[in-house]
Length: 68
Image (tube, rainbow, N blue to C red; front, top):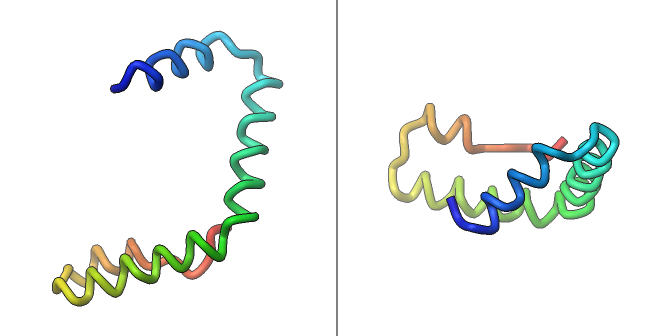
């Protein structure tokens, strides 16, 4: 774990529920706003996995049709 992640974990451990909820809402908003980019990158990963003969079980878990 990097120093930044360790520091963030300490901050989160002491944060109020309201602060944590606002953070989760911000993450959800960012995922929705960037869903096209996320899904495009995921499609590239799936294509690479198929090309490298990744197992169908792993490909099935990797393949996402939506972010939400």
